[in-house]
Length: 256
Length: 315
Image 1: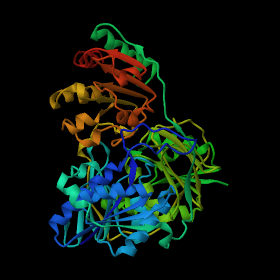
Image 2 (image 1 turned 180 degrees about the vertical axis):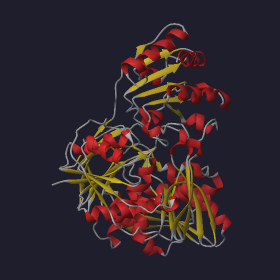
Image 3 (image 1 turned 30 degrees about the vertical axis):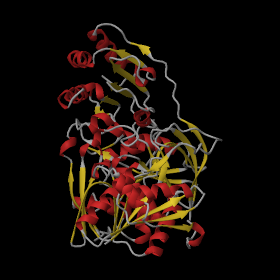
């Protein structure tokens, strides 16, 4: 089985983000693989164990630095990587077109895995656009995946513990959620071995990608800081509880 | 002329408050509002929608069989069909759990740009305001294209009454039932009587301070009494005290309730990323020197194991 995993190189979730002008962030913070994509790579590695003779190809669209995210994917079990290099920030319509073209150029996919969203642009849609371009079925926020006889049975999480179970015909696209698995933490030998695995770099201009009929472009960005001035609620627990109830009723008006 | 189509979500046969808020947001900049309803139209629904400014109500006429009607791939083809028939050039839906599985499908089929989780949108200029970098930034985004799509964060705008006369139309289409994606089942059992995180007015969340799984039931009990949604920090999820679906934060749910009550949560940067747009934050913690206590509206220094039972007793 040819398993493609789309990964994104994003700022570390623990990093403080600062702006350099009103549109761009200071990108000197550490960048890592998008956390949801780690679940996608981990699931790919599990599928390969289950279905021998599978190959896992990690594909990434990004700057030269994004190679380190592909290296992480290789250390977690991917066999090789493809970096489509660009210095541009691409919206999801363009990203999906590029990833689609890169996968076609590389071969054919039996399954495409990716994270349900990226933690930087929070678009939640690239998996669906890739699916539409291939005409493959798509599910998102997958929490379980089982493949038998060319069908994928996928449990997807909605909020509040609700689930939906789907049966997809392969090839298909799966958006991985946090419930899917526990990400592989590569051992030192895994990391050493991954250094020998190949990463092919393709310039975005080398792929024949047509322009999207629309776009989404950031025109300005501001840090979301909400300075709050805490007021203390003091007294015995009973007095504190009474004051909380009063605030919910009279100030927030959320309690009758 | 900006013709906005709004995907309506229902709950127990009624239009959700959060859908009404989205109508109010769209009405500020659109020339006409069309509500797309998936569950059939009653007089109550028509009255309710027209009271908030909807001009046209469309019954998407989905098949009755629940596995077909509820399959988001089927719903997406119905929305796309309506958008094309009615020449809609703006499509809005909620960035709710259901919306996150529906709107991107519609956008992909239409090959139209979509911004999810908008807190504001101008349908005339085609701009949207949304969070980026996991809630650390607010970005203004310009969309271009023939049809522009907006996923609106629940509770971002409160509904305002604006009565207009409304007409209803039924779509006649043969729903395309895809063979390559079949909805086998939907489990709703867990949600009975429980508020959804994204749409709750009050959220009461527990963190490390709850200490163990048994104690965490205090959060659930208190949530029930307050008619609030229970939630958790990542620590509580990683420790296995509650399922992942309850997690608020960077890699969990992003919420904007009227009131967020944080109990025993220190307030990591990742947790704030998921809840800092709450209108009011009440922090309950033993330790005064936490980020949550420093960045809240009401600071309640004390023992949550004494205060929460008191709240339940007094209600």
